[in-house]
Image (cartoon, rainbow, N blue to C red; front, side, top):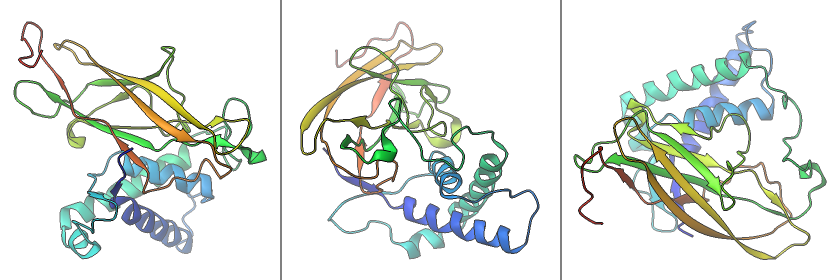
Length: 242
């Protein structure tokens, strides 16, 4: 497993929390709730749309907080997306609101052993120009060909890339229950990518996990699995590496 860290996660969490507190202090009537689940959804909304800054754990920071704060456009985007995310989460009708988030078997509240997945991140490019692709539909499937279940509705599967995210996509798979702790298991996934005018692409990967008793819906910002960059070729263009 590759341990890389998006240092924007801390910045997003700090800024979203600051804005929640400011909005509460201003007694804005449109803010109905700022519970943990609402805040988690707002974090996810922003992180799925803000430009990430990745570093390898244990090798120091390529970008520190001072450098991030000096990027005025980045900070403007961060504030805009944070307010947008808070408003979106506040207005959405979410059946899991103010409740513990559950997987299909409803086991989370019992704190039984689970396999907790890192977030998966990747990028898709035009195979000839190496430009990031927008409007590419990225689907994550399990070994049996089914859609991988996401942590909650703020994580999309399929995910459609758009112009400002430079071809990036991300997934956070819901945990799987285990009979006991400290059991190692390999999980197999396939990424399928489709985009109008391009031949589809497929990429299979396996990730080993060990079951543990822990809170499975707490996002660990140091746990990210980087999927290799994938390239799509327009119809009729041969991939020279094949």
